[in-house]
Image (tube, rainbow, N blue to C red; front, side, top):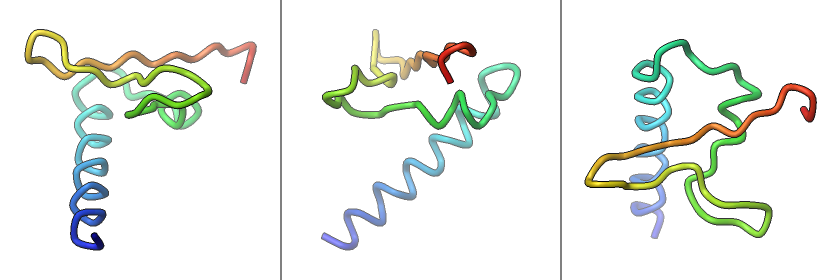
Length: 65
């Protein structure tokens, strides 16, 4: 289980770098910290696979943070 969790954490770290570098202007910390990779009670995930492409939607409202 520890090996699996390590691999997941490494994947998430690399995914963060890809999102940060490949999406135009880098997101602020407050914007990217709300990025969810799984569904939670508080809301839907922001990472999805659509037509074999990894897509993400940053939901950030300046007046609500």
